[in-house]
Image (cartoon, rainbow, N blue to C red; front, side, top):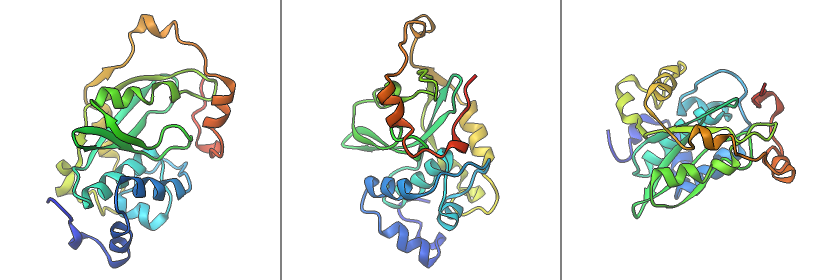
Amino acid sequence: MSGKPESLWRPGELRLLRSFAGPIDIQSFLNRLPYNDRGTAMSPRRVMRERSAHCFEGALFAAAALRFLGYPALIVDMAADNDDDHVIAVFRENRLWGAVAKSNTTLLRFREPVYRSLHELVMSYFEMYFNTKGYKSLLSYSRPVNLARYDRLGWLTAAEDLHYIGDHLYAVKHIKVVPDAQRKLLNPVDRDVLKACFLGAKKSGLFKPT
């Protein structure tokens, strides 16, 4: 399946997907969705129906919408210490990387396609990736996973949860972003940045650090 798989979508879903002119429109849609604090793993169809998503579901939806626009459906996992992992949908423009993401925070969302490598893109999140105690928590990231591998399982429109995608994403090899010795030198986050990050966050959906 490539290009725009229009035959998969219902009329209302097609209207939504056709309303996206580019990645920033997908991001704007995700920003408007209430944060889902349940342990679901909804397909893009269910996200459109339920009108809510957490970061994993948002990444799946963004990958589906990007694919509709002609991009590969790629997602990347960012693993964290004493914090939630974060999943993003990634895309390239003129060989430069950008990202679309749903987040319960204000700082882990869209990235313009200006990064020369996936590593550069991921590191753009580093300073802004911290838990509610202000501990900078990003540990590593996965190589992009192309969701086309799950086409035969109907991931775009499935009624059941897609936990098997999350299981695979977390199991693939991850690349460490900071040496362990260097992590001991990290400073806590500035109080104003901490406040701005969690502005409007759904408290029940926030990781509770130890």
